[in-house]
Length: 178
Image 1 (cartoon, rainbow, N blue to C red):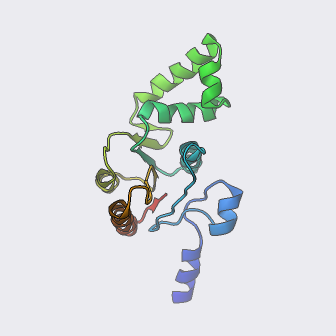
Image 2: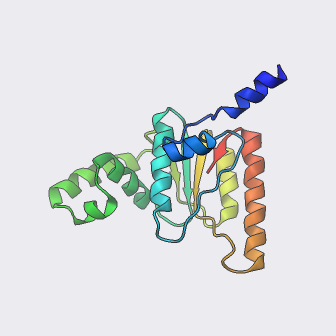
């Protein structure tokens, strides 16, 4: 019985939808924190929104918390995905295309849950995020913006504390945090 339970724990709870991630770790596991990182302006937020959309398409309730971007900008990334255009193409498109995309965005922005995704842009510091997660009923949460070690030892300690707190929340709530 213990071996069967251990084997079951190897199976991911949520497929990432990206072959490279799924082949390496199998997807997102409940009770775990997964960290994705890259240099500034390399598309981390866009990729996180893509991953969030793929989880929502599987029927999971997804939360996205951003300390960096307002909700409308995060929605623009989702709308770009749905329209097949990137956000830059939308901003340079003709008025008819912009009107269609922004009309869809406006309708969706009025809803708390957008296609299975809930976007929070209200936290002003990383330590408000755990409270949002704890109060939500999400299966998986994507956090946009955790600054690692750029401003000295104190910031590294604060990030370490925040990550440790997120690990505890992921285990207690049985959710995946990316």
